[in-house]
Image 1 (tube, protein in one colour):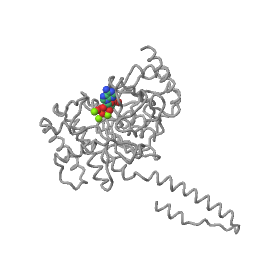
Image 2 (cartoon, rainbow, N blue to C red):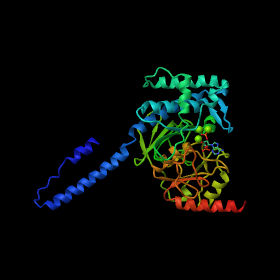
Image 3 (cartoon, rainbow, N blue to C red):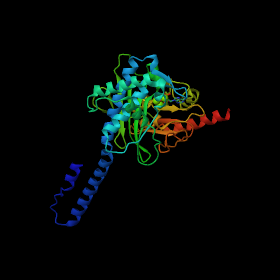
Image 4 (cartoon, rainbow, N blue to C red):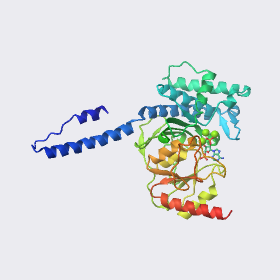
Length: 392
Ligand SMILES: Nc1ncnc2c1ncn2[C@@H]1O[C@H](COP(=O)(O)O)[C@@H](O)[C@H]1OP(=O)(O)O
Ligand SMILES: [Mg+2]
Ligand SMILES: [Mg+2]
Ligand SMILES: [Mg+2]
């Protein structure tokens, strides 16, 4: 900002005594500077929030990696909806909540997150709570930049329960999935720590830490091996593009979605778990479109990250009837892809609305691709859905 203010003080050097060109030159220059100033102020804001989000997600990834390496049977529990939750889900949520509040202490803090401390407050949860508290403290200590000596079990419970906010269309709300793809995490496959910020109902920044995602492309036709270096951090800020760096801290690189217009060259990402998305429906859609390659099935929002750097060109998600999508399963992924030039809509082609609380209210499914393929993809989706509905 300082440079821009200084620039505004520079009076154009004009030798012509006719004032009109001077005025128009000055006006032109001033308006150009005003555009630069307004662009810079919109892209410069959320700088501090993005730095805090990157730090929080990277530390949470460190905790998750440690747990995944030495996972114990007692580390895994089942929630009331029968889905799994681990000490790493809770630890990651406590850590992100603590780091954000600590780094951005002057502001009011609202967090919409997946987990709550209900089961950890029961007698049967005490051992697990001790283990989570140790994991959180060890991770904070390994970073070395926090002044607190150590968190108590009560601090950890409080940090987890900060995530109970209802979100909404006013003010700022952080949105967190502490481990997206817990089933992938348990299998030793892909998972992500997904963190986004909503401002007045819009996603303004998003971070995806994907500890098991190779730094090189995972597209079906690229060569990769188990020796590939893994651990990616994707981050995006509204109006400023999407970047990827290694979780170990390499220089960030700007990424872009695939620019292919040819469906025959496009490949599809979808859920690993058939229970999470209708694979038959995606297969009918991609057949209509003319996609040749077999689908790439991976867990979690790592799909959005991989798509943002052009590893594939399409992501389709059609949950089984009755499933309600949550905002933390898409907010970070959505901005990571859109800032990389992609488009994210529901099956009717509407943008996703993150302003309605903890759930997404949408038509049928979620579709992600580049701008060129979207019209034909939407047509194929409509036709396949009509066929499916008429066969019922
Ligand atoms: N029955 C379900 N249908 C669709 N998504 C689900 C279902 N159960 C859990 N999920 C969520 O789907 C996401 C992973 O989807 P996928 O890997 O298939 O893309 C996760 O957010 C996961 O929650 P969680 O965050 O608890 O892992
Ligand atoms: Mg879960
Ligand atoms: Mg999730
Ligand atoms: Mg989760």
